[in-house]
Length: 109
Image (cartoon, rainbow, N blue to C red; front, side):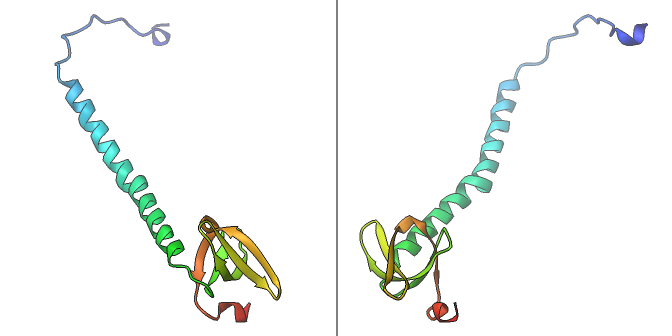
């Protein structure tokens, strides 16, 4: 029956002090890993998206996050008016733009 109950042992010598420095070092390493693997790439993507939105001009062909393909008819501060068919325009937020397409892409679509 001894294998079901662990034996109690007297506590040995106290562990040496200094565990706080090791803990801080480990936390610093984890933060560095999180920064370079998650935070920094996300900031880079956000910066690239912002530059792409700022570079959009009238006549550019774009795709929205919802998959709508259209040609920019007009631009305001926070909205873009897209011509998606003859005499059909819609307004979308600038942030909804997923990508800018090369000229002539809509002819093939």
